[in-house]
Image: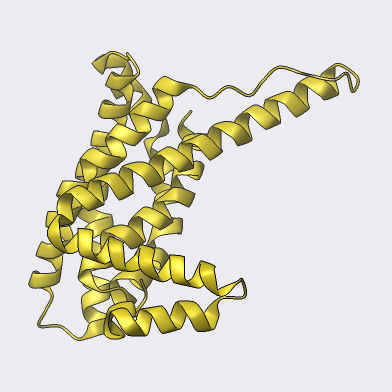
Amino acid sequence: VFGLDRLGPKGVCKVFRLSASVPTSMSVVSCRAWQSYEAILARHPVTTKVVTRGGCYMVGDWIAQRIAASRQRDGSKHRCGGASITSALVPDERRLLAYTIWGGLYAPFQHWWFNWLHTATAHYSRVASAAARTALNAGVAVPLVMYPSFYYIVGLVRGTSIEECTARLRETILNVISLDLAYWIPTETCIFLRVPLRHQVLAFSVANMMFAILLSLLVE
């Protein structure tokens, strides 16, 4: 993602082959997978980003649920004096669905927003453009669009009332925003500075996989 567009398809393949410490067949698979992604992204940019972002949030929340369940199991073992706990770690499928749906639904706005930011800051230097886009995204889109949509879409899909969604937002939003700024300011600056426009939603989706774990553990 970071500067791969400058290499072209053949250059990308060389990068995968040279950097791979696994058999060459894995390098070939990685190269072909990237080329397929690029082709699909070119033909269906919004749909590709919807699937990518939704999938990353699904994986992130699944990991968060596993971590939370593992902690609960370890706590039960400690309280029971080391007794074995054999209950399966079954994920909350409705919660998983809610995070996946929200992750995908936010992608079209993010696609449009990043394109607008790119155009609006095109006359700045690269560093100034990255700083301006980070400030606008963190200061406008995140608090006014992203988090309200997160609390209400995830809550409603899980069967929570609008009043309960609002109460949950008010209860946790300050902690969430604090975590968001600490995690995303350096991450966004790096992405806006180094990643080409068409790959920015993908880069954010990969970063979101880690943030989804933190967000799930904090909000749930």
